[in-house]
Amino acid sequence: MNKREKELFFPTDALPDLWHYLKNAADSGKKIVMYGMGNGADKILAVCQAKGIDISDFFASDGFVRGHSFHGKVVLSYSDVKAKYGADGMIILLSFATSRPEVLQNIDRIAAECELYAPDVPVFGDTLFDSDFYRQNLREIEDARSLLNDNISEKVFNSIIDFKLTGRIDILRAAENDTDEALVKILGCEGFSHVADLGAYNGDSVKKLLSLSPAVNDVIAFEPDSRNFRKLGEYARGVENVNIHAVNAGAWSASGMLEFDDSGNRNANLAQNTSSILQDGAKKMKTREITVDTLDRVATELGLFDLDYIKYDVEGSEKEAILGSANIIQSRAPALLVSLYHRSEDIFELPLMLKKMQPRYKFYLRRAAGIPAWDINLYAITE
Image 1 (tube, helix red, strand yellow):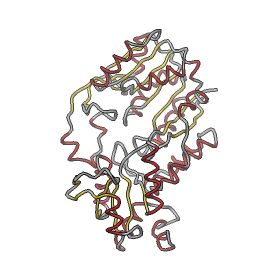
Image 2 (cartoon, rainbow, N blue to C red):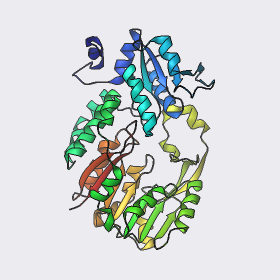
Image 3 (tube, rainbow, N blue to C red):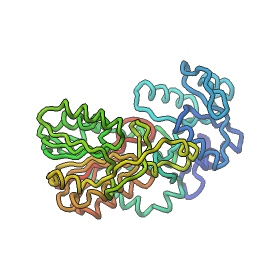
Image 4 (spheres, one colour):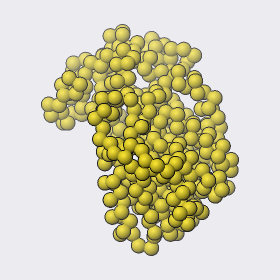
């Protein structure tokens, strides 16, 4: 990045803003091209269009181009766009998620040849984590940072904030952790007996926990999607010596019925969480009403109020799920694992809410390998 590009990238108060940089680069003649197709690309394209950033082309990895078109443009190969614009004549926006080592290596290779960023767009909600959002929430961001209990957590937190503002994958990948190790060394999962998994999917996270926690007797597993719930039930029936109480409901702050995205994939979520950035996609969404419930009520009914551990990975509904287990958190202070990446505000809002709810908690932050800033886990324990 030359001196002029640095000035564009750091427009005011030395605070970076990728969207500002891209707008200025496009206006000065640089071609902006997107690497990848799908939901993530749709979101990034929608933001670019709203900010007046013209996208010149879309491309896929060499060997994966089969005559596809995307938003009215023929999808090119990387070799094609590099030949068309030159390595120095374009900026590449990575628009898909991956944790596969071979894909990450290919991204690193492209980033070594061209200017490449991974714009941060929220998984759910419409709020961009840009420089304006950072300034508006600076006090809360700093308060959340101050709650973290070790240097690794602070490094992860800082890398996530910097990545969200810059889209730089080198910053993001400099702070990656072994999240299985965190379950053992931070949470002390070997001693868990009664646990809850909110967002159990097909049982994969329960299976992982049981492999690390041989003392578990009871699991409360929430899963709202009907197809995923069937797979969860099949898994549960094959597990010996552990009572897995599968609950076909979404974890929420109250009992009731809500509209649900009935897609059957891992990211199936409550319809109200869907970003209006993709309004066309939201209109086509297949929805149905599902039961939502609180962990407080279900755990009490099952006689398992004295939980050792709760996992929250509920596709943008983490705040409501936490509120629905407030009584357990306040009275029992179980160890927690909370996903902090679904909404732009989660990174600071959820730790601050939990600290207010249970002042005894100490917090640690870890992030699994991959792009973009997903799989961010907040661990809460008492000592």
